[in-house]
Length: 228
Length: 295
Image 1 (cartoon, rainbow over the protein chains, first blue to last red):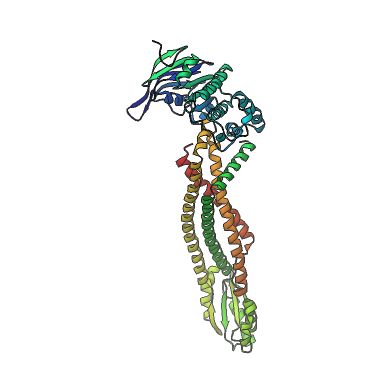
Image 2 (image 1 turned 180 degrees about the horizontal axis):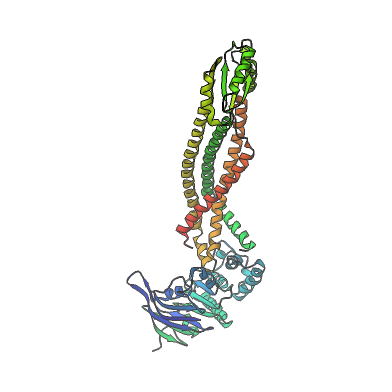
């Protein structure tokens, strides 16, 4: 699903955010990317949905070489990859339904199909009864679940989350992670960049640790910090 | 693209225009003023041209005769004139006929002439038409030497001058209008830029969920187009009414001045203005999109 080979990413002339990252993720995996601020987690995530291109090395996602992708192909690629952020990136004035449907409307999905898919995906994140509320009226955890619903509405094989629980208290953070686990159980590959030690330790999933732009640890059933 | 998508984009564009009332109103106003000024020049030039063309078709030599000529002398002179090479037709206009003609041209103001009716100051004349307009000068010079001819005139110089005026109006008008249109494009660009800025958040999400660039771009292009077309409609409305009033005014006061009738002129102008307005709008918004959206 994801294949990074000797990936370097440099901003400006000197600062290297990633220096020689190799990473392989199989379909159906659940992977935490951990590490201190500035280790390169966000840069890695941004490479995965082609917000950035690597300075050198190759990034293959869902079978496509992102460096060779033409700009006009990018929108179609993005429909294959759901992305969730720390700050949700919802349209606060619009309803939950509209926020999720938005992703379909702007990709020219028919109204009939929209009426079929939106309830299904809201059901999945447990927000079926909140459809008519405005996004800004929801709690943080609910807003993040709306964002996940929107990321999933195209049925992507890959879901990427950058600090999805960064703005949430521990209880709601746990709810959100449960949704991600649920999604993973249904077959979607999930990659989560996270600071949340408690969550990472509780789930015991694959952990890839970055430090100063390098992969320093890759464990199948890892903890946030390496066991001594 | 699908019909649904177009509906969505038109809705979005309309929403943008409404949300951004102040700037939209300003843009529409500026578009209207620029197009109005442009059209005033076009109309002026067209009418002067029309006037010149009307006069040109009437270029004929007026040969004013001495009042003392007898009927027989007049007939002889007429035959003599008709025999000059290059002359196509000659017609005799008696002093009385000339006065009647003048009265007709004065229209409602013909009362002004009633004072002179007793002592008709006009001379009898021959109206001479040449085979082609370029011969007018040569033929007129020849006619001047004939016995019984008092004066020879023709309007060629006036016609030439009028064509020059029409030309100058055209050129000056085009330059001024070009500058105005340029300014208008920037105003529309500014208006659309505000919308783009206000919606940058939404644009980011659209890119994220896989909206194509075309779909992101079109609502803004349509927004510019709406501003341009609405502006042109206002310009057309004001212009139409002004031209109608002017036409009535001219008919009342100087009826012999030929003016292009408003139909079909105004219809054609309305269509051109709408197209020009739309073009200005699209150019303006693509300018903003290129600089601020980078999609």
